[in-house]
Amino acid sequence: MASHSANLHFVLFPLMAQGHMIPMVDMARILAQRGAMVTIITSPVNASRFKSVVNRAFESGLKMKILELQLPLAEVGLPEGCENFDLLPSFAHIVNMVLAMNMLEEPAENMLKVLCPPPSCIISDGCFPWTNDVAKRLNIPRAVFYGPGCFAFLCIHIVTSTNILDEIDSDSEYFVMPGLPDRIEVTKRQTSTWGRGDTIESTKVFERMVKAEKDAIGIVVNSFEELEPKYVEEFAKVKDKKVWCVGPVSLCNESFQDRAERGNKAAINAHDCLKWLDSREPGSLVYVCLGSLSYASTEQAIELGLGLESSNIPSPKSTSRSPFLHQRHSVFIHHVRTLTLWFLALVSPMPRLVTVVTSPLERLRFLFHNPFLRSKVASLCFPFPFVLFPLALCAFRGLPMLNHVCTSTRLHKAVF
Image 1 (cartoon, rainbow, N blue to C red):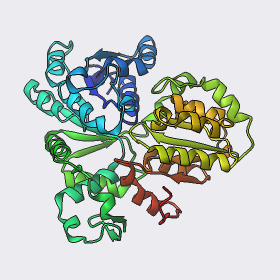
Image 2 (tube, rainbow, N blue to C red):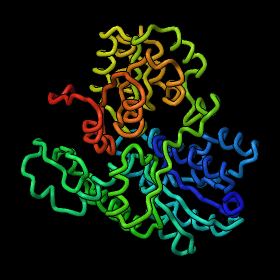
Image 3 (cartoon, one colour):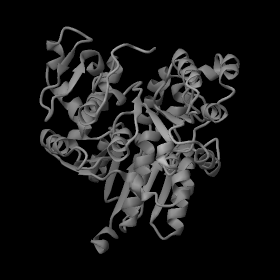
Image 4 (cartoon, one colour):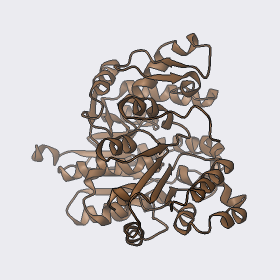
């Protein structure tokens, strides 16, 4: 096994979004720990976010390296340095980012042609369908990487391969999703853009992703079979492919330094953050995580802050950007100035969840944006309540599963 792995060279293409990039970098370390050579290809700004982790792995004897490709930002109308979804000026600029990523096909192919040793396998995020075309031309096996889990993508497969939504009249009434091992209820509004998008352009992107997935040798998922055994089996069956559940990949971060430097640099020193957490009383904290691809509106962000303040519970908040900082920050600062740690985290990211949970968990309550792996694992492993605030994209896909496997209460009345 070890001697065979030593001859392998994996090339990874992580999507330029923290929730996708962080687990893929973790997976790269796991592959390298098993003797394989691993090359991560990304843009300079994204490379800087995990370069220290890769350098430390290389110094420990692991065969890991980063190669950089420059995103053509000016050509798609993006400001210089906007190389990650959490750096985009607005949600509307996601289209520009996708265009820039698609323009990496030719330079990436040229880079792969001269790699030594030649790549044995490409593992790329599902949002990079052009890597399938490159892999074909260079005769390199390619596997797809998905982060949210098999349940979410099984739901997408059902919605895109059947006419179930055409048979539903109401946008708000719950119906049972067919073809799932369990009784899962969703609404048409929640599922209408799964694997389709809300514009002609985005629908074409999803169609290209589906086609590229069909050509892949298999699917790598940041989940584990014990978490969703029936869905792993059914997902592999409907896709007629091998599905490798390699998660939770965050377990490879055994040292405090690796956990603290996982992802973007935090605005607050991780040791100072944990020291502050350790000083609080049990059940006295709320950790709020809205993710890197979620764009809370100005009203949502302000209402959330005011609600947390009125609860009198200190709340460390993890998010990469908040639109209101550029619009109403002077008013909002007045309202939340007592929540110093919470507000500082709005300016730049807090230490990652994998770092925060090293503090005694009985002190914490959680608010997550994405109700799949992190919140589901938390609910199974630790006896504390948490609130889910799905904002966009895959966040809604994991919610029905969580309602099924956990003791939960659905809020029928919109808060915002």
